[in-house]
Image 1 (cartoon, rainbow, N blue to C red):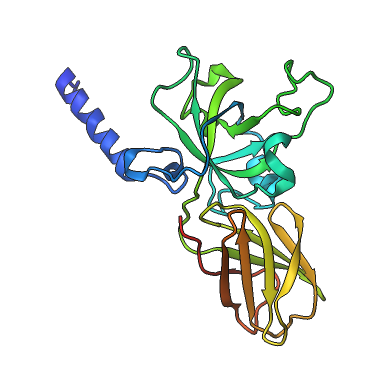
Image 2 (tube, one colour; image 1 turned 90 degrees about the horizontal axis):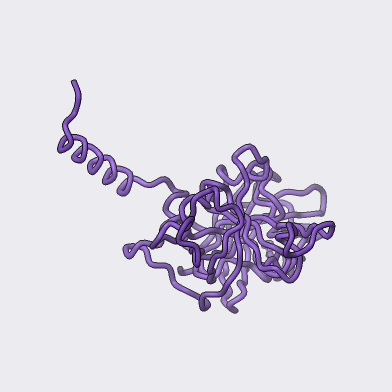
Length: 269
């Protein structure tokens, strides 16, 4: 049985409402609607953005920040890789940006913006000119998005688009995650799901038989230390780029094992 125009419009309206009130965890970061207005940390600035196709493996490997499978780690498709001018050698990993398409009435989707988390690095290509294909060459400020995110603000045919960006506070569900790995007396901890400004600048770890021990940044948000912390409950002190420090006591129990992930407190967003 065919639907008349009124029935068709009613069906589409119901479908739209259903999609809006039941977003996926990743989709919640795409829109900056009035019901979830982000807290800006900086003014709007100019940059450019491109996208990569779904067949690209970078969503599985997690990229230069070390988060692993981005879907399993909770970041979904609301992610971005940054050029050298923005990446700051990995310190920005975990930070959040709001992007909007500008200056192109043909390709931009009016009134839209997306919120993305930094999970990767866009390496420069010095075989190409900065204005001739070397999108991520210094001093360019460039964002590389999954096509699913790019299409929230622009038509995919636009390719290399002018955008505006600003740092915002990150919103996360649950606490900070501490994934412990290593062997012997070497410990590596991946810190993820950080709210607030999102980017971690310093980490300390403490066992029940030690004082607070500073950890070094290995790469991205992987932090390491050489110490004897076996058979001790572990506490963590995490500092972010805005100068805020959060302490989570006894996050891992005495019988923790390498390969386990534990959840601590969370920064305010």
